[in-house]
Every structure is written in structure tokens, then in C-alpha cells.
Image 1 (cartoon, helix red, strand yellow):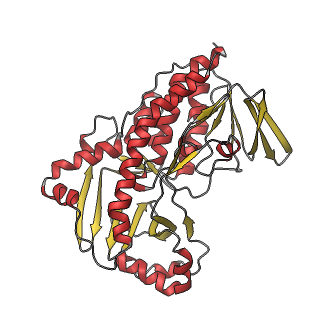
Image 2 (cartoon, one colour; image 1 turned 30 degrees about the horizontal axis):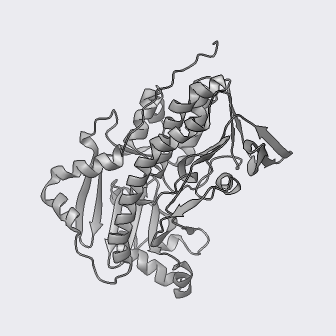
Image 3 (spheres, helix red, strand yellow; image 1 turned 180 degrees about the horizontal axis):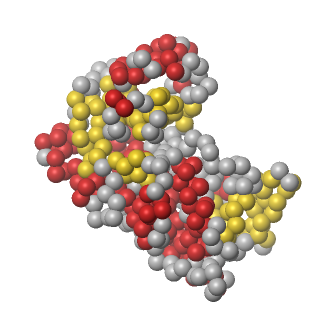
Length: 390
């Protein structure tokens, strides 16, 4: 997204992507209303909505035998009052296809960044491996957007504050039937939690486990794991035999952390490279998009003139650190006060008091909708589009 925005503003950009394509399972598929609003401001929203996706206007949870509607997006002050569910590989293909319309945008696939280039105390480029041999790319500014296990931030020796998480996630898919319904659900039943994302032909499932428990779960055996899945989602009883081995079940290690300083001379980290988010609320993608918009707003004109300074990089962190800290604070609170309690018990946990309030006064569903759908300090596109003949 940042490459797209900078190229749109006339800045020369090279994006290095490690893989040959984007076709692989990512941690989340949720495109929030704040991101859809950015696409509206860029004039590409209608094109996006033509692509296969699901629209979720309400979110709820099955807590024991009781279903509770928790989030209602229908009152948001945005053009799209829903979550769009789209596999992240399709979203990345979509962004890349629009970015490629600009002559200043270049995407290098199968280019894995392995190190930074330094000169006189400043980052001046990156070194990458490609099928054709080593590649060096030099630039006025290097953006580290390579995720929670960022090579860029490691090589830059940026210090990380680790906030911790009590859970990991087992990521797998199960076929979906029309009788299942369309609702994207969180499910809680006697010490077990699972989130199910509707991907049309199948459910993408995220089964929460206590951190470090995967080996113990495997030792209990596959049948015991199937029984655990059925206990939290009984309607999958006739489908759990679709997975017959551990290999398709991916362990996603949950990290919540953030850099103390997102930048150094010649380099800036954004997204998960700057702040790994908990999967709670599925907001990681959208925080990263907001970082990209803010960075483009602050840096585009400066980069086009070759006058970007450390002060400008500091401004990006100042702009985005507040919403990051608040969002992570909410996530850690939920992790420690709810998820840790549920995963540590074999009993059915009673409805938390905020859920009871929402159940009693449905209008309160607008509050979590605002927090999830728009978030704290939503960003808007301020950069102008430079025509190709300028």
C-alpha cells in the first residue's frame, strides 16, 4: 500500500517480495471499513468490490449454548458499513495491479531481503537473494514492512518491547455447507475458543490454544483433537475427518510487541515490523494500512524533493504510535482478563459483564463497531495523484 501511494504521488519505488506469488495462507482476511474508506478516497473501491468477497455487517459469538450479537457496523460514518472478507493474497494482487499503472512503481518478486547496506552511519539500501543471484537496491529511504519476524528491523538492531500473549493459534480449513449460515463467528465452549471465517467454499478456522501447548496436543493424538473441535463446533462433527494429519494444521505463534524507535537514518519500519498485533479483532492488516497512509502523507512530497529527514521519520512514529499503543492495550486487556481465563478452565465461563451490557442494550453494539471498524485516529489520503505525463 505504501509503495502504491508513493508511486501515485510520483516517487520512484521498488517493492521487494520474497515469494514468487502471493498465493499462501495469511493470518487474516478482514478488510475493515477504515481500509475500505482509504480505497474510496483512492477511487478504487468499486473495482475492489467487484472481486469475490463476503460482507459482514454484524459480528457475534456463540458462548456455550447462547448466541450473542456483539458488533453492528450499520451506523459507521463510512461509505462501507461492513467488514469485507477477502483472502489476503487477492487483496495484495489487487493493490499490486493498481500500483503497476504508475511508471514509478516496480515490484520485484522472489527477492528475499537478507541484509542492509550502510554508509557513514546511514542505511542506504538492502541486499537480497534472487533466482538470478544477489541483488542490491539503493534508495533514499528503506521501508521495513516485512512482518513480525522482520529481517529489516533485526539487521537495523532496533529494540523491541515484548508485551506477551497467553495463546497461540492453530490455523486450518474445513468445508462449508449452505446450511451452516453466513455469519462469521467466535465460539467459546468449556475452555475452548475458535473463530471461523467464511471463505465461501470453506471455513478458515483459528483454534486458540494455550501458548506452548501444541506439542502436548499432538501427544494426546489426532482423535482427541477432533473431539476438541467438535466440542466447540458440534455442527462440524461429520466433517472433522477431512483433516487426517497434522501437516495441514499450521501453528501461528501469537506475538504482541512494538519497537521503541521505528526508525534510524535512512530507514523506517511500519506494520507488523514496527508493532506485531494480537489476532483479537483482526485489526493487524488495517493498522498496517493506516501506517502506510500516514507515512505517505508525511513523506511523499519530501521524498519527491529528496529532502526527507529524521524529523519526518519521527513524525510518522509520533502519528501512529498512539493508536498502536491504545489498540494493543485493549488487546492485552482482553487477552489477560478473558482469553487466559477461558483457556485455563474446563468449565463454561459465564458471560463477561461487557457482553451482558451489550445483550441488554443492543445500541451499545455501535461502540465495538467503531473501535473495530474505524479504530483510533483513522488516516485519510492527503497525497495528490501525479499524472503519468507530469
